[in-house]
Length: 179
Image (cartoon, rainbow, N blue to C red; front, side, top):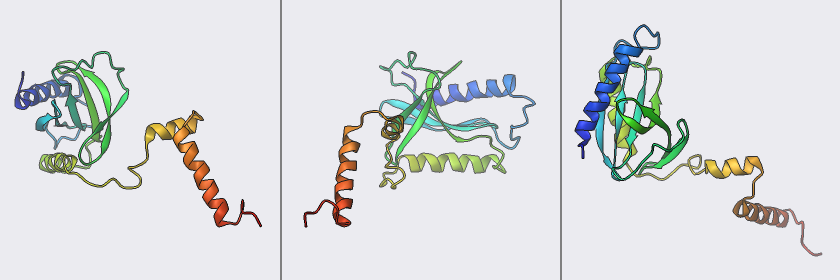
């Protein structure tokens, strides 16, 4: 079993190779930014951390030793719950790393004046990610439930709540009361 530090070194080496072999001359590169793996650690038996590159900054999660993500659909978004909130991660397969899930923090990286600024943002995000907080009203929205409602699928819980709200509203306006 590799340590988070060893995994971080592999990820950094892989993204340095991608930078040198595939990204040269692409205008979105920020020349002030270097490739660096930041804060890789265990969380719920998985290794996660942030990769900073001249073109993007992503949170990366690797499967636990007993997990096989090879059958997951590439590009599919998977919710991952953290103490701060739930984030959606895209299923990826990166040569040199294998199956992983990524969440984009920044892309492109043009807003960073220097590498130290990007490094601080990555560290701050990881600190925030692991800090418990109450979800805002916007964060409480269940995307899956919202999708079912928008598609007109059966949603008994929301139907019941909607009927309760209509009944309460009718009582407030005097509808449904016997004279």
